[in-house]
Image (cartoon, rainbow, N blue to C red; front, side):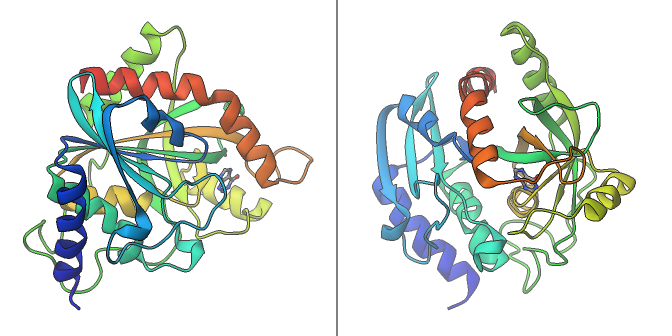
Length: 271
Ligand code: HPA
């Protein structure tokens, strides 16, 4: 089956079940329950969507939810797909294509990541200013989907300036400030080595994680406005004299969750 047919089949099922949406949100680790605050919400399990992979990471529910927030229809992914799970880049980004078919023009991508910038602290929220990938693969490889965007899409401003400003203003109005920086994707699933973290810093990264770049790239290819917000759940490997573990990441993600949800909610209200 070609990629366009696959997208159309998945989109048809999703639109039949959930309707259309103008804003899309990819809810990263620990943020999934934000979707529960939507009114008139309809839900569809990934398992019911033809061609959708099934999320294998604990803390990722595997549900597409579409509901009303601040008078806008918002499609939310409770749980995303990661390259380290063994999925292809096309699998990982299929939901972004489907959201675009639903009518989504603005995509908010969230994640948990490790802080590389030494000024950052665990618990900080960071607006993504730009991104770099060390996975060596690109979700736009293969025949170009002309219906979505050009063969050689511009990536000189992946993350929308107005949305970034809106995120900062929203945080300020809620009594806190946001960091801003470059997100670097490693393939995972192991956390980086201290040498990789030093390398990432030299390359210009402020944070390292295992997601987000493919989704943002495909969203931009399709002409969506993209906002990326990261939760710095830990300092990246080698910065502190202690090993990293998934529990530390989920614990911090949980601690920051209310603030993170408040920020996303405030942005949706004005986006
Ligand atoms: N590295 C990569 N991914 C992550 C990290 C990290 O330190 N923390 C949370 N996700």
